Amino acid sequence: MTSSPQIHVPVMAEEAISLLQIRPDGVYVDATAGAGGHSERIAGLLAGGRLIALDRDPGAVALSRQRLSGFPWVKVIKANYSELQAVLAGLDITSVDGVLLDAGVSSMQIDMAERGFSLQSDGPLDMRMDTTEERDAAAWLARSDCGEIERVLREYGDVGPAGRIARVIAARCKANQMRRTSDLAAAVREALDFLASDPDEIRTVFQAVRIAVNEELKHLELGLRQAAWSLAAGGRLVAISFHSGEDRVVKRVFQELTRPATLLYPDGRVREKTLPAFRSVTAKPLTPAPGEMRDNPRSKSAKMRAIERAV
Image (cartoon, rainbow, N blue to C red):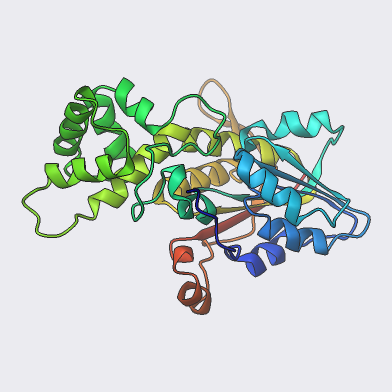
């Protein structure tokens, strides 16, 4: 039986709205619509403006379209945020006044066992954010050698015993014993059978495989850059990350965009310094208020950063 997603509250919604500085007649993009929580708040502040809501997940697109059906100035499109500039060009939009990008997996996806993201409920080893993509997590693991699995576990999950776990996963794949989320969890338990309780590595292994299957960090960097250069002067890009790898990408891209460019003569002398096209709005990342973390434990790891187009 297919499970139904619960009603979810968008993370750090008030902070996001405040940083975006919504103008009623402005043009905005919610690059990760999900169930439409952030989009609904933005849409409610518009009068004469437009909102483009994107998501790579067909299920999220359907939910958002239903939730936002009362706002004729909102257009929901199935697309990855790494395709943002192409989407805007197709709509004859040359620039926007703000972009919100909420990275990572959604609570809606986690709560549906058949999507294969959950540690708590057994389901097919899927983990695709875009269910129209051919390769799911089981296929990715089956086609990856032990070295590639180990690299992904280290880079995307900070998994300490990555080699030990990767060898067991690869062996189970070879024996055709890696089809369910319970199979992946069992592989981690087998690799760390000296532990009395369920190892925390189950969570980090799931996280790493999910990031690899969906190529999340690659799309995140592309999406951030495309969103930034789509802004009009004074427009803002607000990014929410939930994982240290995501936050590193956001921080690095924002630092590059807000850094002055220095042109040098061949002998190393400074020829010209150009002011950056963007300025930082958040000196340090914002985190959820204690009340939000208490009411929504999944928000605890969230970090919010923002930049503004200066010229």
